[in-house]
Image 1 (cartoon, chains in turn green, purple):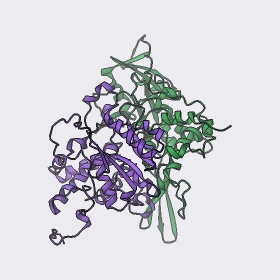
Image 2: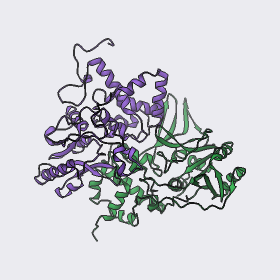
Image 3: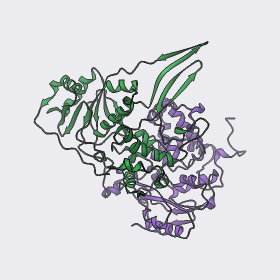
Image 4: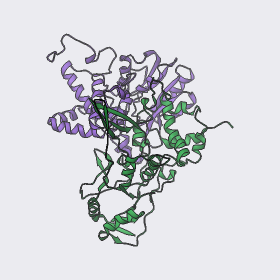
Length: 334
Length: 301
């Protein structure tokens, strides 16, 4: 196994920075997120996931799609160049690594490829970091995520007291490690076991149960405490809904897309004013059904990765583990 | 079980069993020891869910807007700050007094759940109070039908005097305009436009908010700094003179924007222009921007 000493890590990042923007978890005003590494000598990885997930590096909260202008009777479209920037994302936890695979399903499969997303995904190498310590809001293992070994990444790293063990898990990851070969040493250490979260829930059978619960009175009580904000969906690493609108200035304008949330009243409001999800009851039901029923029906996997961001930052601590448990306890006729 | 919890369950049980109210709104325990969450109780046998502890931070007043169509009454528990939220809704003519049964709690203060993360219950005493509690001068509710007062002191604050709530505003005022803009720009760059601040605010009681009508053209749905700033400023000005300083907006912000500093700047200005005023203390005194007096300053007209 290869190892980099703790004090050599900035040099590794520096080599990678020659050809790519290197992102690391960084904290500002108490909010951690992935930001470009700009040569800081101190690179630390706090336990658990960042407050903001890495999804916006692939699916930005707002992005322009194309521009247009009108001159007399003629209209002109201007394509925007696709993202070119090479990136290396360092310190992604297993839960967030799984979330990228789920976003891949949404943006790259079933007959439509989202070019903006695909380019960013292809241009980015992911270095995962195993969890030595779980936060009390983590429940990744309940979703089958292994906190010690991430899926679909290019390099897996494990933190030790004096440095990081590294293992390439893709060809591109191997090439990335080869670039910094002189800074690494071959060691016979074993990767440590992952931290086991204390929060647990067994989602087995929840999808099938929900298939019979759309009209169940269960939903009548669940929504009351929800305040209808989008903190859960915007912090969720797998929520991916967006809206497309345009902005005009005189004879020109642009189309953009931006994050949207099924928690918003406007989300399903139609021309003419009808809203098939008129209250928070239907909106909360949709969020839960999307994660635990529709996503598995379409892609064969649950749409939750157990990162715990929603239950931690929800203004009222709506807790998806409790909701899953409650769904399982609902008695259905027949 | 603490005395407040005991009393809460007792009263909720009686009110529901006698059919005096249809719902009781209180707090219940979440999965984590430092998470307490709003609870909605409809049947007397469910009152065991209700609790009071150091993390019952949520202001429950706003939920009354969900029950305006109800035939019967709703009972809810309020701390000192929450009770001003009830006055806010009454004065804004959003709810009817006779349809609400208010059980006040003389509040011993609540702690900051985010600071408890990763700690065990044995660390309780070391966890900071919610910031608003350090300013609090009114732990006893200003409106209620009955009150629960156990005589407990604010944890952590003890007998200490409340802090001056304008200290942070003054720090920001001492910055140059450019530095100050930089400060706020950085804060609102982070804003996700999740609208948690608006949705928990008792003063944000418009039937429909302009920010839920993105096609209106007032503010773009683009989640970018300038539009986010426009949102933050619009909301701050819309609650000017009506903000009851419960601090819920700032507490719930998932990205930690110090929203109350913006609101307190306006409160400070209003106090200086129109004389001291604290919103939500009663329903009779009109908010400074909701009335006109001949002695109002008019140098800007």
